Length: 347
Image 1 (cartoon, one colour):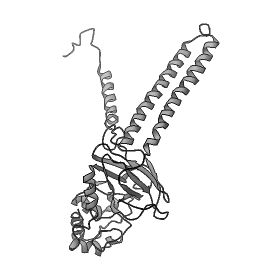
Image 2: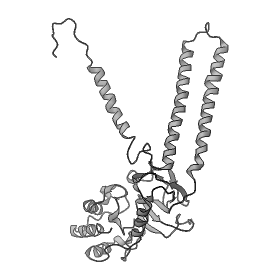
Image 3: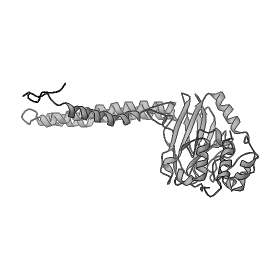
Image 4: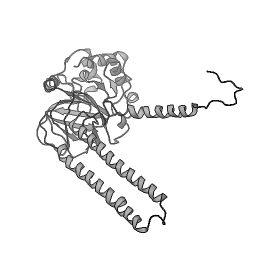
């Protein structure tokens, strides 16, 4: 409705308040959106993450109670006068309100939190998987045996893969964590807390997913140029599906001859990568025996398809700056396409 300019009583202008409210809502939306998803600590899908989330809410409630009490006490102190409130009341407020009450609440929260910690390290009853954080990807080995060594940090043997960890739902899977180069940190927010990966040392974490799904993991310790692009995927599946997946990973490559293999070997790729069933036996980079079956390329960076495979081979340093794999843009387009097509068949 249009306002009459001759009206001596114009209506109020609510636009500023509405605009302010709209801005506040717009600012809050990204925060609210970040509270869910495959990489959110608020999407608890594991026994440990569920316990940690519960601990967070209880600690938040306790801290809120202390904060409200102290703020109320401060307001009372500001409004009080010597004539109305004597020195004795002031001393009581300081002792009981400022010291005793926060100490008791914090002590109860600390006791309750510490009591939960042994449950986070209950023995595993599922598979044993070794994960090595390397710049800037994850070496994964299923069903490893033996004790970790000092030089390689992690046990040898097992079925090797990279950048993707499959674990059974409802089982406590022990993850052995190490690194051959610098300190990394293994963190799958939806399943458990962070654990450092330190050269020359093996740390352990137990993952017990309660819900099947794909969960994002990250390196939570700065480790170099491509640190922010060092991601992984944890795939939680029923136990039978997990066993079938590991058995399939143990098989040699699906295609072990042809133009793709020749181009791969002829251009030096075998110096860094292994493809079981072919002469390629490099150990510097990820095992590519079943690379086409993985969800992503470049440690969680790109969707796994032929186009992205081609781009990654041609301009690795542009796709993932800081990565230690050299780019092969100097190769003829036909050679790059042949290699990418062959890798795309390795399921």
